[in-house]
Each structure stands twice: as C-alpha cells, then as structure tokens.
Image (cartoon, rainbow, N blue to C red; front, side):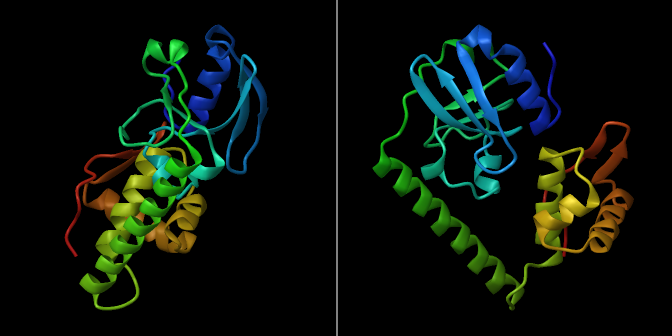
Length: 195
C-alpha cells in the first residue's frame, strides 16, 4: 500500500483500491466536490482531503457533499461519513448519510464558529486584519496538510502575495518551525508562535 503525503496521494490510493471496496469512480474533477463515486445503486459526491478536518478548514459545504475520503480521520465530529484509507475497515464501512436537516445545522454551526473566531482575532488585534502570528499559524496548518504546495498556492490560501509568503516561509525556516526538503514542506512545530 502506498502511504499518501497529501490530498493528491489520497486520490491515487483511493483509485487504486476503489474496486476492492465495491466503489466505481464516475468522475474526478478539481472543483468541489472532488468526485462522483458509486457503490451498488447509490451515487455519492465525495471530497478528498489528506486530513478529514481540512474539509472544514477549506470551508466546504456539507450540504453539497456526501462523504469525505481522507488518509487520516482527525475530525470525529464530522456530520458526513469519513472513509479513512489508513485503516482497512473503510472498505466495509456502512455509509449512513446525514439528513438534510443535520447537514444544514452543521453548515450553519461551522459558519458561526468561523465568524466567532474571526471576531476574536479582530478584537485581539484591535483591527480588521489577523495578527501576523495568526497568519503564520494558518500558513503552517496549510503547509502541513499540503506539503507540496507552491508559494502561490499558499498565498491564495492565506490571502497574501507570493512574495509575502516567501518572506513568511523564510522566517518560519529561520525559527525552526518549517523545513523545505525533497518531499516538500515539513512543519516542525505547529504550536502558535509569538506576536
């Protein structure tokens, strides 16, 4: 078995084992959700993530997706069923889909939590922008989940320019929180840094 290092690796590993688990891949695409898959007579909208919690980090809408396919299930509170490819049990998993009401509640709950975190960061910073420490933490989290991301991709994720991301990654490397190796980015310490 291949051990994925990012979301793309999860897609490849799922494709490799899908037939053994009774799934047929109908389509894989880049816009959300990533795939349409079928098991028996049921078709599912699936989103691939390296870690299940990235579904929430990426602000995906659970009303427009049926299952999360990941390598690591670090989100036990997910309203959607999670197939974690790191364990063999995913192949026999029963996919109990949430009701429309459960999806709606989850969607609005996540929006409310994000708004509350944003308000908290704004209050802590005394202005409408995140503190640099908060942005560095978001950058580290993103690079941890997407180790092969380019500076431009990371910039889009944290809403900063490529040159700013280059400066930030340089600072993180200098402080020992990030390493760039032959495999991509490696986060050494994902704890919050000082201001």
